[in-house]
Amino acid sequence: MSSPRTAFRQTWVAVRALLIFTVVLGIGYTAVITGIGQLALPWQANGSPITSGNATVGSALIGQGFTDKKGNALPEWFQSRPSAAGDGYDATASSGSNYGPENADLITAIKERKAAIAKLDGVPESSIPPDAVTASASGLDPHISPAYALLQVDRVASVRNLPVASVKKLVESQIQAPDLGYLGQSRVNVLELNIALAKLKG
Image 1 (cartoon, one colour):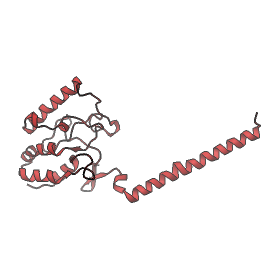
Image 2 (image 1 turned 45 degrees about the vertical axis):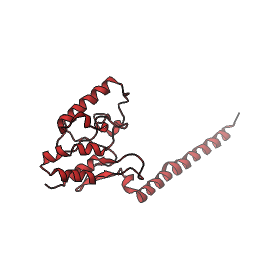
Image 3 (image 1 turned 60 degrees about the vertical axis):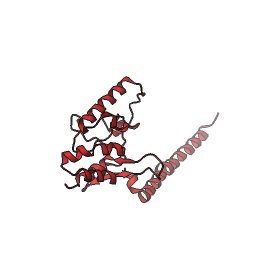
């Protein structure tokens, strides 16, 4: 049985160790990693913000919808892919639907989305790419495929009274190649595309 003095020493050693490791790992390590991030990769470390004018309008990593309050697509903007995160692109509720490919609700949702896009863009349902009607695993993907972006060109050009060729050229200029040339697929960041679109003059 240990004496009160021994117990006190053991407790004091444990307290000192806790304090030291709290300072070193909880404060020091965090400060060092934060400093490295700010020096080496400040844009990424601060959330990859996208600005328009003098205002931050979003992040290059998190998508957003271009719809009205009722969820209807605003035809003057390029549309993002569907989102299953909360009410749509909710960064606090990142998730997919977790529906399997034969889930009845998913099949119904895809059919409804195809019909809506076909009507909005005046295209046959067979031409609509998969990313236009399915959500990403996170529900926050800010990108769409070049195929889906190009499919929307005629509608955006018509609503904005812009030459189709100019809008198509804009989309092509916004296509991002796969990372390192081979990781992933070519993609278009919808927010960045719409910001560039807003600056396009007819």
